[in-house]
Picture 1 (cartoon, one colour):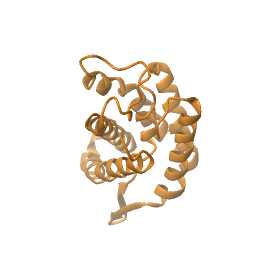
Picture 2 (cartoon, helix red, strand yellow):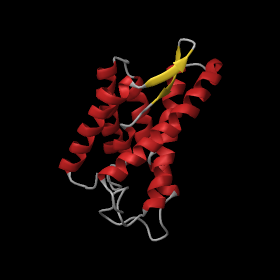
Picture 3 (cartoon, one colour):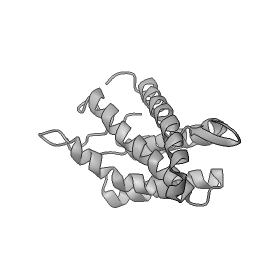
Length: 174
């Protein structure tokens, strides 16, 4: 999943979209008629965009990614809103985790110059934000805080670990 080029980013989006829609859409676990475990892999597309991508570009691409998943899931803007917010939020962990000498001009988040520890922390911030925002918008009321919390506690670790595994599989060496 390495690359700054347009082709690499389009390929990354297509792969993550098809995995999300055709594989992980089928996975949801729960009890008592409610589903609590969901796997969100496509936010990895937002996290893996080149670091120097302008914020409006990241937000627009995130919106299009979320809208694509919304169309496939039939969720009427739920994924688009969460992905757009994640695209906007992405700047904060990037600033927080920025090395002392700054980012290199052609750095990608999963690039060798930043290291695996940086990537693991950065992906954790993006995954947690996406899931918390998504489940909060889905519930649309703080009254359901227990459902939101339970969905987050179950979905975040699974989504995060599968994202790390996918990145490691497609990019075995840092």
